Length: 227
Image (cartoon, rainbow, N blue to C red):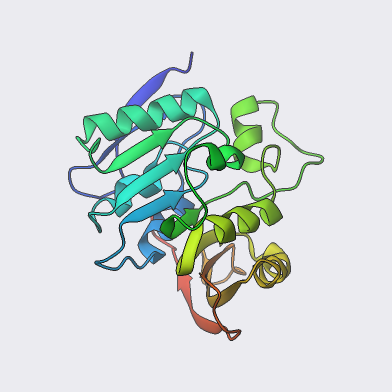
């Protein structure tokens, strides 16, 4: 069993998160992704594809009354996510499903979701993989690949639904290729730096299902000073 701790969720008021004491924890990536997502009043159902301990869903619950479905494949991490939902009294707004998102067909029909978010594993399977199983699954494409993320997002989104992704800039070419392949074209790209002097470390991407081609590249975001 993971030893766990209750933390404040960054500086969000009245939001708490359960985390592994010495294991997987949410990161700035989740905060940036949640803040990047534009939710409309008529959005009813949101999917968080690789939820971890549900940081994205907890933040989104401050922005919308839509119901958020969070898929997390790791049982112990999903348990932490469920605890986080419970301690924030959000059971009415967030559902945590402990299953591989590749099995989403068992739960929902195609074209169900208005908005989909994903903070997926960034790295392909290879060298320098952590010996910690929880970190392996969180960081490497053991259970799901970038292409599969796009295939599922396109399949589960309603027409003109939006897909939001945070990833590494080094894989931006793949992101654009897979988005076009699965008819969920990239509409916006925002690069994120952790320091003014450094190259971008992350990229935020918005895609829209069955949209025309054409990308807006927004100004870089610098997170220097944020903790």
